[in-house]
Every structure is written in structure tokens, then in C-alpha cells.
Length: 88
Image (cartoon, rainbow, N blue to C red; front, side, top):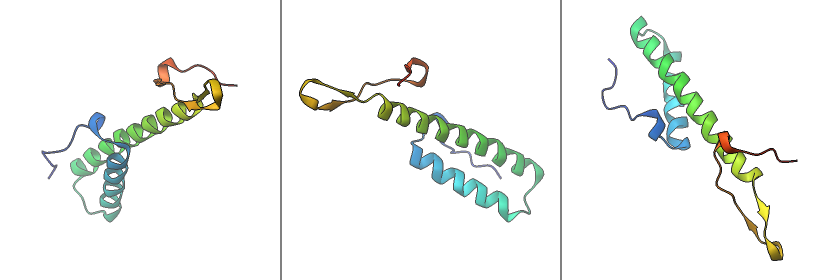
């Protein structure tokens, strides 16, 4: 039976999404589930994977967008993947 209190995926932190993805994979690996439950778990697992990948991409961009300020101090530029500039 599907959980009715699932948190919307777009509200999960990386750690929460990864933990839920691991739990979902473990449940699928046990087998013996109804087809409908397996499909629902698989669909949520794909969405969780995409969330983790997007959050990792954002984190990578933040690291790449580090710039040196006057005096050598580092600061970050808050960017979204769609706003990123190429870093050479």
C-alpha cells in the first residue's frame, strides 16, 4: 500500500532524497511486491534520482562559481544551473 504522507520530492534535501532513494531501492530489491506498488516505487525512485542529480549539479556550480575578491578572499556567487556561465 502506498504511503499517503510522502513529502513532495522538490522539498527534500539531498540527504533526505538520497535516504529515501536507498530505502526505495531496497524495497524493490526484496521483491514480492504487487505490480502497481513496484511501478509506483520505481517512478518515485526515478524522481528521487533526478532530485539528487539536480541538487548535486547546483552544488557543483556553486563550487565552480567561486571567485577571488580583492585581497584573495573567496566568495560564492549564487547561481542556478540555467543561469550558469562557462568557467574555464
